[in-house]
Image 1: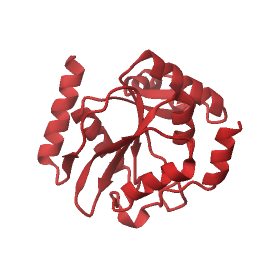
Image 2 (image 1 turned 180 degrees about the horizontal axis):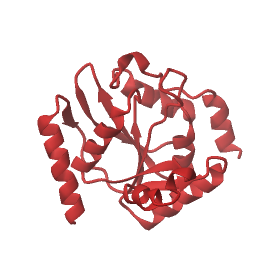
Image 3 (image 1 turned 90 degrees about the horizontal axis):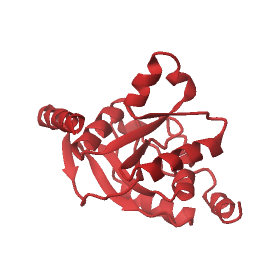
Image 4 (image 1 turned 60 degrees about the vertical axis):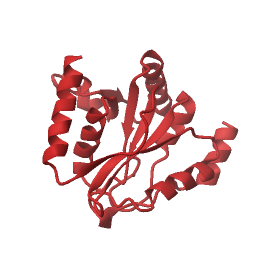
Length: 201
């Protein structure tokens, strides 16, 4: 498609001119999935994740509060891959993502899992959505210490939250983000409790 070629061309230009280097470390994974953008320490993270995704010809989407989609902004936000959600309706969010994923095998949902950019832990929304919708999770990253960004492994979550998060923690252990002092430990507030909740909803 023309837009795909244009986006990849822009991504190639970005990587050619940027001091950041793209790491294409893994074979391309197919099928709908969630793409984590972490550590999330700067608004520049979005630019890097966009350049990574466009280079890989990914069709990305993101979740935004429904207020962002009102009026003339709506078509623009949707054109950029936005999905309007009601944050007070978690079940509705999962249903919306599941519906999109089932309709499009190229569906990729980009999620930045940190609750804030000040070290207060990760939100578990991406985990819940992945489990409910049957989506794999690809680990994307920027790392200021090496000035690299790219895609890591793609995981099939098991429902054992502690074990899955241990794998994610190991991967991100040496990834500093754009602003290393704001890096957040990949940890949910109650991982054992979430495991039990998923097993006995």
